[in-house]
Image (cartoon, rainbow, N blue to C red; front, side):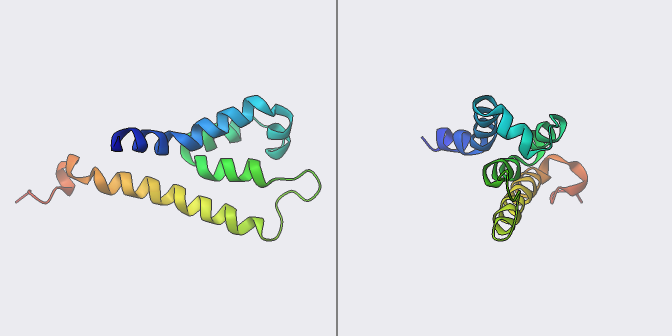
Length: 101
């Protein structure tokens, strides 16, 4: 059960971005200025930030005020995810292993 939870937690932002992109393509393309490349890179590298940007963006104001707090929080979550996976897999690299003499 724990592995299933971890699988869904890791894949959720990417799945949510894909569903949002498919369900509301005009809103999604307007949020990213009509570009498909930026959301694709965001989907691969920073999915929480991409999801927050697409959800919080409005046609009138764009991203303004208190929305920036949520964008920064999502970016920190993405950085923490990348850093945690690097820290967890540090023993796989011989130069970073604690068992080296």
